[in-house]
Figure 1 (cartoon, helix red, strand yellow):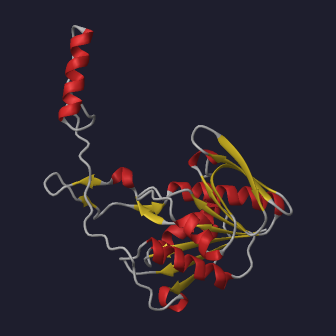
Figure 2 (tube, rainbow, N blue to C red):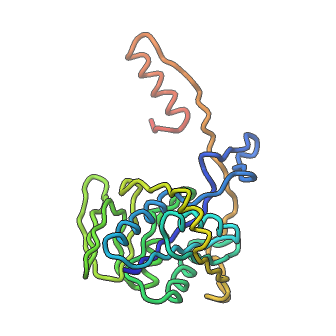
Figure 3 (spheres, one colour):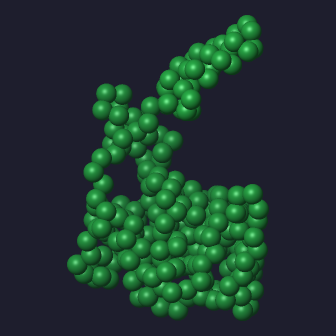
Amino acid sequence: MNIIVCAKQVIDVSEMKVDANTKKPILQGVPQKISDIDKNAMEEAIKIKDKHGGKITVLTIGPADAKERIKEILAMGADEGILVTAPDNIDYFMTATLLAEAIKKIGEYDMILCGEASIDLFSGQIGPRLAGLLNIPQITYALNVTAEKDKVTAERNMGDMAVTTEATYPALITVTKEINEPRLPSLMQILGAANKPINEWTADSLKSGLKPLVETVELKGVSMERKNIVYQNDIDESIGKLVDSLAKEGVIGR
């Protein structure tokens, strides 16, 4: 079973702060890491490999320093890493296109595993876009995955219900955070990851002339300050005051 895991380097959003005056996020000095749900995808890939054997390749689109983050996935159990260096102004169209071209260059594969979304932007676009470009079946929001010899079955989270879906290979699956608990690599695995290959490809070597279709004009944070207003005494009067306050803030309509 040849499995490709798509992983993204993101900033640690739990460490990010917002400038009180400009409302812009302060990104300088914020640590980078592999998106949490992509680690769930990696954990699922390891489980499938343990059962069926094969090879796991982790594929990342990002800056040159993402190579250090790829080592985290190699330590978990991936066999090989591929980093496609790309410009800073990359959008979803460019990302999905470069991933598709890189996968075509990799060659034969049975399954592509991705997180349902990245923890920084959480758009959930890359998995479905990639499956469309490769013209392969996709199963999104998987809560569990069962890989068999000639098909893969997954239970999908559809909000108020779960739907069981199956597909033939090759197939793309996006997993949810609830699917598993990613393992922590041992010291020996971390040291061993240094000897695993990481190939670096440039965006132009895969698809020259790519331009973003969407331009990010501005990025602002949302103030999370609490007003700490407490309503006491008569319950009916307190409810009326709460509704009035929420309407004044635009949280609810009147």
